Length: 148
Image 1 (cartoon, rainbow, N blue to C red):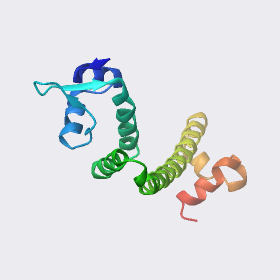
Image 2: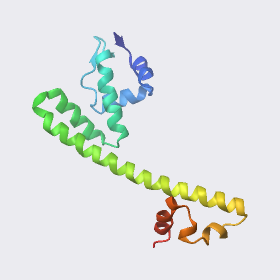
Image 3: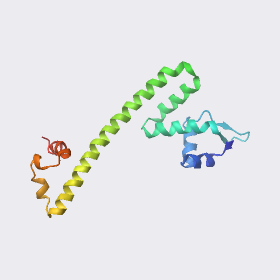
Image 4: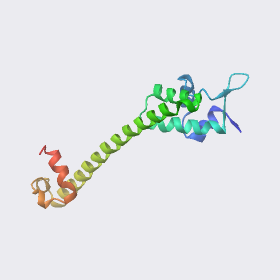
């Protein structure tokens, strides 16, 4: 089955302009064109587009995505450099996740802090608690926030 830019964009849940931009940036060398030059997407292009979307979500630069696609189109002789690129980006995502987990712990602490302050009527109550009085999961966060 064949799809227009608009149909494929709808299937992917993105704007048609995003697909056009990807094409302009050289990310879609696998997409065929009709005799009149209109992009024609096939079912097999969907997987490529999903991979591009995934790599973009990881924060990978477009030039690296383009390089990945070019290597993939060259075939099996590029397996090693493709694996290296994916492994490197996986490490980037793992670092982002760790940072977000730390941010989430801080937000959870602040949520507890202000809930406690609301219940007691003052921020002085949670602020003046000793470490032993704090819920255990927030002790490390408080030490970090206070630079201790």
